[in-house]
Length: 353
Image (cartoon, rainbow, N blue to C red):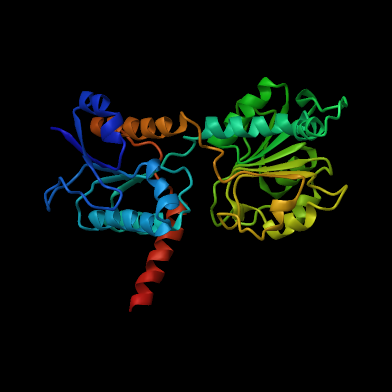
């Protein structure tokens, strides 16, 4: 029996041969939430809104994404979709919430793709660690000023990276860091030895130890109620004055106000920050972070390479193969990640009463 999929572009366009070889078929869910080619009572074994759909944010605003995800939520509520796959690793996105809550209410399997962007994000982290240690920005300034001056730079072999969140992304950061001869310290909920880590710590004391030892503090924990505000003024004070902070997690994992207060003070940690995520995105024009010389700002695109989207599609298709074999799906959304969505749905329902 053909396994029926409902997907936004470009799954049908780019993966037609692969899907056909799996004895599956794809119906296109248009970006406006409509399905022109489907019967009114059509059902699907799996559904996937691709990361390419996020382009709607730039062209039509977040409201268009709300409409698209609500359309799929309505199909789930109507009993027309048996499994939903989310294209993101982090599922703390408000326009995901109605879909997540619908899956919970209907008992529909819900997966996401933790670690799918581990490689490109780890490349981003290593690139910025190298850029900072080898003073690339200062060399560029000197070039612009026609100033021919040799600089004493830092060597990664003599440095320690502290990875707050030793999961999929963190473990890839650790693997690449070992290739440069760095000492690697990880932090997660349960302390246990792990490949490419010299040490894995847990708990408040473990976090304090990591912060005190690290030359780069890389934040890549998922956003949950337990990690909100994980790093603030007390934690920044525990860092080396020369240490840099790299955040590829979520903006609210840090106390951004405390960070803004600490960064301009010479001789106080952190010495600088590489920021790919922010408490409010896009970063407001009046944020002091824009004007700080020791801050590098990127627009939440540490994951975005020419191979990343293909990796995301493959993750989904690998799960399709598992589902067709009756084997356990990978990336099932944990209850702790569902809680905010369920709470938001309940609040919305109460507001309508």
